[in-house]
Amino acid sequence: MKYYKIKRKTRFPELGRIASSAEGKNVPEKEYFYRIGKREIIENTPIFDYFVLKSFDKEKYWEWALFDVHGFIGVGSIMCGWYISDKLKTLLENFRIAPKYHFYETRLLYKEEKFKYWIFQFPVDGFDNYNYEKSEYFIDNQRVLGIKTAEEYNEYDYKIWKETKKNIEWGKTVLVDKFDIVDTWQGDILCSERLKQAIEENGITGFEFFEIDYEVVAE
Image (cartoon, rainbow, N blue to C red; front, side):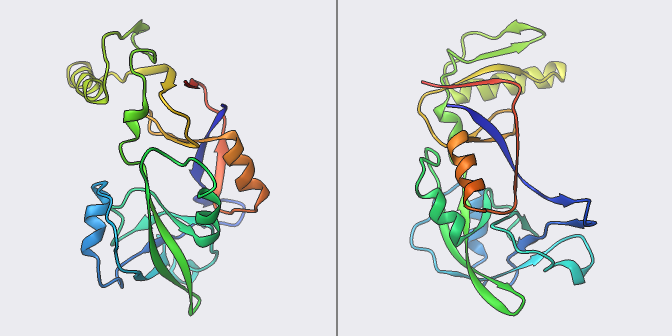
């Protein structure tokens, strides 16, 4: 399975614009946002009504474009994941998205009309899908061995950074199971080639894709 780096497209230099993000200050139940940001999956939440679009650009440009995916800003910016349209949610449900994830229904007020949008909460425990013994990662070109779990890797990574200020370099990532969205220790979000194709073929807006320079293998 081939993977690509997937990112929200945030800058449009040809237009002199930046993408706006979802601001949840008008949502009465804002106390849920902190728990979602802590990767707690919460069932039976109310409809979060309503978000608006906002950016660091001039206010008159906040609603210059509506995409199928936005980030978060201000109240709610603690949440991990994406703010997605109903169209994108429907598409994602046809794929093996991730080991754990959740959708929270919201309303987005855009140009005086309300749209159904969703908080797509991910990744949740994504690093548990790694085979750490078979994956290949290095410090100063020396392969690191003996790590078996995400907790052991995280402790070792912190220790190396604290002592040397060096980052672990990944050469090969081995996944235990095949999913169409993958969270990486490098900070990248990856998507499978078939999900990339579906996003492009269905005219989903707001993403851009990049080749990756490391190997990803799903067992």
